[in-house]
Image 1: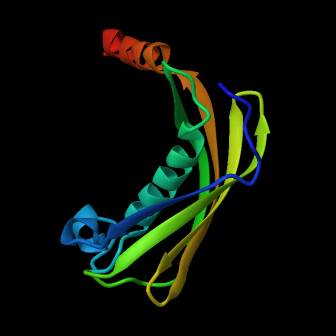
Image 2 (image 1 turned 180 degrees about the vertical axis):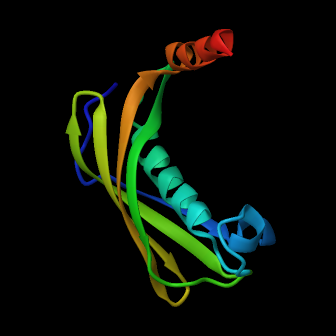
Length: 132
């Protein structure tokens, strides 16, 4: 892993599609952007933000997120999230993330990612299959 630069920012963008609604993902019955899909967009912004500091064979995994979804967004509207690195200690990197639609802020989150060896991480996860 390269040296992490605090305050590095990255943006992730999407259009709200039918499969992203609360009714579609099962987190509610409304046909508006679901909280899980907003969180996924936020994590994607953080992932992209951290990717520029990773070496070959490394990846990052989310280990913590605390999110607030403050405003509903209808299908068809564009949304985006901006992630900013706020701290880095060893392999742990912390983010502050804000999500928006065309009308303004729709959510905020505090998020932590860990830098890991992609191969070792997946190998360890797959070991669980031997115990089922």
